[in-house]
Amino acid sequence: RKLLGHAHIPRHHAKQFNQFDRDDLTPYLNYHRPCFYPETRMDAKGKEKKVYRYENMMTPYEKFLSLKEPEQYLKEGITLDKLKDKAEAMTDNEAARKLQQAREILFQLVHERQAEG
Image (cartoon, rainbow, N blue to C red; front, side, top):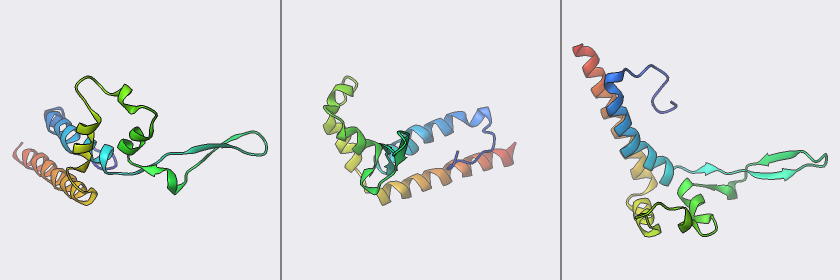
């Protein structure tokens, strides 16, 4: 919603938004956009506290690789080499630019169709 806004998406645009999500947004989020991963610490009173440190900032792909034996979680036919190739296919800045271009094209299609209708 942050990227697409909070307006209602009409049913006849669903395929275009789903394709954008699958082809552009999800790969960007998984391979190029870093996230904070919290550490859980106990304070003096025994309460759990989440601490977000820059050392724990990484993409979901990098977090996946940090797991013990990540290969065990992969679907059949997917390898770590294939994931690495996807992650390294473009830089973070190139991926962000591609995402913004795809978003602009998507919204142009939606607005053109609304103007016609």
